[in-house]
Image (tube, rainbow, N blue to C red; front, side):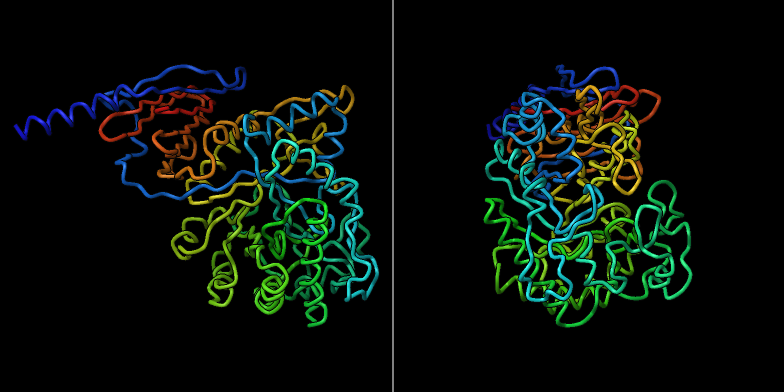
Length: 496
């Protein structure tokens, strides 16, 4: 009798799993977000990419976000009021497409500002008497408020691209000279105390495997205790002024991309300078003035793992920070970082920006990046520019992609392939969702990630090849057989 009951229970469980509803969503270059039905099968068909037992703990996903930049504001303002509302609803509303709840801002200008500006222009103003966010009130804050209309709980994280120029050894906002800035070429030697490799800062394309190939030999931020403390105070003052505008900053990082030696706003730091500022100045100042704000270490954009570990291995730093923010080349280090620092969270702090093509190929690369960053343990994910005009050219002469492209002549918008790459994840993966399986980098052309959201499973599968791909996920002995058409994004939702 007991055996009969057990057999009946197992049989009913198997039938229930097999009977679960499976909904498929597919996007190709020609058709977007096509909805259809699928089923679980009793036999596998295709390459097995993941096995789900039901006992996986996984990583708990926290939030999706994007960035508020001046050039996004300019593109946004070309749209009609109806189109503006549609865009913000799709990106930020609970019933929208992408469910963004977080935003990123920079203190002082970043590379997608209209021009360089700093929050304190008065040289030597270490007491910050003249510190202000008046430029942000004209551009960044209105854009964030347009998002806040649909997401009242919007949270921000902040990192500077460059300190005020008067706080740097080169007395300029950039690191290296270029036709797009006014720094004398003679100052370039400060970076290495010698000659600069002309290929060191290739903005796109092959970077010869290691980035940067050489590391800065000195900190561009003046390592005077008075300057270091004033800079830490500046972070807190920025938090105060944004709070007065009704925009809470809930996390900060000391620097964006300390390893990009840029012609646009930037600042090179050594490992020693990084530890000094974070441990001795920024962390204690935040604890005293804003204990509610999290300090993260980043944003790391280097694949020089030994250098990243040299910083994060410091036990004092580990006790001071909540997590590690990675972008660009540092994505390559995620498996090692996850294993080496299990108590620190991982964040993907900036999506790769592309080259202004805003085409299907760019969308495919973004689909892979979403898969790889989430599959390797990132629990927050931030898009870079969400709306740009034409080919997305920056003030400093390079072009980038966006989720939404605006024709500057017709003032009409277009949702790009990258928008739909995000939608295939954001629509179903939200706070509390567990990331439980990843097909792995060996399958980078057919990336598969499995998520658990309560009683349902979500499977994202891309096919970035010219041929049909047959893939399979084993779910407790039943099989989700995925037939992915060439160059397609696919999401399967199993259960209600």
